[in-house]
Image (tube, rainbow, N blue to C red):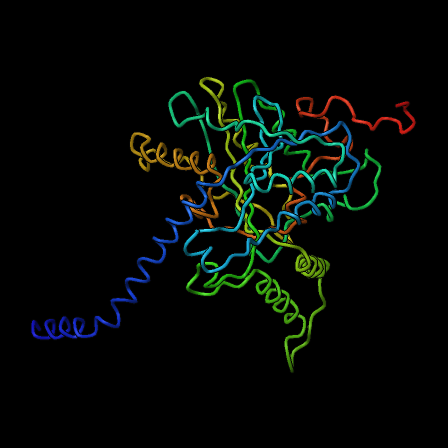
Length: 398
């Protein structure tokens, strides 16, 4: 037996010129990429832009969908950019935030994309105002001063299936303001209901989905999401034509709607997405009764025949013996908080932290994050522009 072991070692030694370089490449490759990419990211200046809206916005959510299409930045790169410079595709953070019940809309981005965001957003919403503001996250820390509960959201079904969007709610059609049903109302009402000392942060991190291979830093090719959608449509259609000797069954209304929604999604730009939610309060202001409100903020986007959101991992544990002296919870709270502050998910240091990315199209994103229209939302603490801007008359004397 010992002789067999020695023979195996001798064989490994003699063939080391074959397997050792391969092993070193596979070991060194991810370490080097992580180093150069973190170096590249650290050199980029980041900005947080706040969107302030007028009292009434009458545009369809399609306007926001057109804006989001401009964020579909694939970030083309050469081999030198990828492996030497560490260039990464850009990502953006769309954020809905309540600070003591005062509701804010933010977009986080690299400084070099600020001009593009301003131009594209003003083109669709001329009456809004966009300001660079200080980050609202640094003052919160993982200490006894703060109570917090942090989670992420996932899709309930496969990525191919879309959530219930503004088109399903009829917001793409002209309606009387009083008859509109806007799914964002529930989110904003919850955010506006928080009291002094309470905060809620909702972060939607997006990066353009694309096929990737060596030029993008992958040893094995990754196809884009459309292949999965086409496969799902094919599987559904095969149920209605089961083959020779079997009787096809008619499509149900739900199945017909699913096929229409899947085919509509194929025509939209799609993003690798992650959604995080955090309820945070200072001292005695922490109220655990507000946690279910955060959990339910995305429930209205769900559909039995399509997709929806479900709760992912979160920071607390079911039983006391799972977390001795709160050590595990303190550690995961610290990681979640740091990942949120860095807006880190698509790249290191918190790449795919606690979940894998899922797919949302521009239509789906415009449903869950956009300037709200008309009088659909009456939240008194919703930050808006106090008065409507107007251009001066053309016939003013000079």
